Length: 398
Image 1 (cartoon, one colour):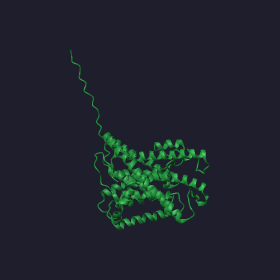
Image 2: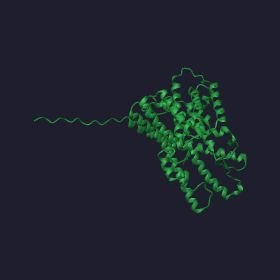
Image 3: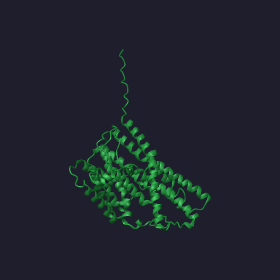
Image 4: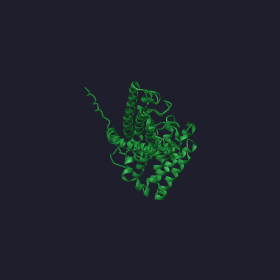
C-alpha cells in the first residue's frame, strides 16, 4: 500500500493493511458469484457488501498517510488528482470497454438466435446515456436511478470526487483531525437523512457513504500517528477485532445499525496498523500480499467475468437441458445451479480462480503501467516553473 510521493520517496508501507484490502475485495467478489449455495441464507454473507466501506476507510487512512502533509501548494494538489485519476480511471475504462463488447456480442447473438437474455442490449442499466456517465465517473451521483454497466464501479466514481474534496479541504485547512471528523460526520448525517437503505446506498447517496468512511479513515490515521500505546496491537487484539467484525456482520442489516460499519472497519485498521500480532504476520505472507496487490483489479474485473459467464451459461442451458443447469431468481438476482452441491461448489471455485488469474494480468498490463505513467506526469506537472517574461527595457530618452 505504498504511495509514490511528489519527491519520489517512498512512505512506510502498511503490509498487513494492504493484505486486508485484498481480503475485502475477495469477499465482495465471493458475494457476487452468480452460483446458488447455502451461504446465501447466512446474514453475514449477505452483509459482505459492507466490505466496500472497508475500502473507503482504508483509502482515507492511506491518503492521509501519503499526502496529508504534502498538499501544501496548488501544484501539488493538482499532481495528487492526476495520480488519483491515473490510479482508478485506466482500468475502469478498459473494463467498461469490455462491457461494451459484451453488449455488442449480445446484439449480434440476438440477430441469429433466440436466447433468454437479461434485457435487450444497450438498454436499462446498459444504456448509452449511462455509458457516458460512467466514462466521466458520475454514475453514482443519482443521475440514472440505478447502478449501471460495471456496477461495482459506482464506488470508484464517488471515491474520485471524495479525493477532490480531500485535496481542497487539506489545501485550505491542512490535515486537521477535527476537519476529518467533521467531514465524516457530514457524510454519516447525509446517509442517515436521505438513504432509505441506510449505509447500503450506492448510486443515489453513495457519495455521502464514501465521505463518511474516507474521512473516518483519515482521522484513524491521525490517531495511529499520535498514539503512543496500542491497546489492540497484539495477537489477541487482532483476533478480537476480527471476531467483533464477524459478530457485527451477523447481526447488522440495511438498517440504522449499518452506520457502525465504518467504525468497525476503523477499529480493525487501527489494530492492524501496528503489525505486531500473529495475524499480521500471516497477512504479510506472499499469497496474501498478492491479493492486496491485485485488490483493485479483483474488485473491478469480477463482474465482467461473471457477466460473460452468465451469458455462456444461458446458451448452454438452452442447448443442453439435460445438464440440469437452472437459474432460479434468489432475491433479487439470478443464481445458477446444477442442483448438486459439489458441482455448484466447483463452479463457485472456478469463478474465484478465474477472477484471480485475470486480475493478475490486468494488474500487470493495465493497472501498473497506467499508474506509473500518470505518476510521471504528476511529477512533471508539479515541477513546472512559471515562464518569466523578459523585462521590457525602457526606451532611451532622446
